[in-house]
Length: 146
Image (tube, rainbow, N blue to C red):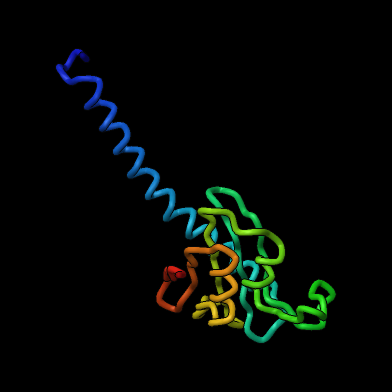
């Protein structure tokens, strides 16, 4: 027992609950950070619709890419695609617990709606993604995949 009469068990429970609260706050901060990184990727895109995607697990970036033209040297002609979501799928496999962040910007750099299209949703689902955060004009949204 501690000096104030509490048992070790109750002190440990309080400590674990404080860690859980801190983890939720860190998760919100990390989501905002990964979306900022996806916005930077989108700003680098040469395409008309500038979209960027980041694949992250915990505090680690596994892949990042922007959408590309079909004739870009990094896009092979057998799989001629330019969606950012599919580019990150080619760069890394999606491990369990990884989250995809997708962002789109207009010419002024303002975040726009970046919900993945149905083809990208199918590709992300078959790749193993369970959650996708994407930007909207009102703020980030979460998409839970099948």
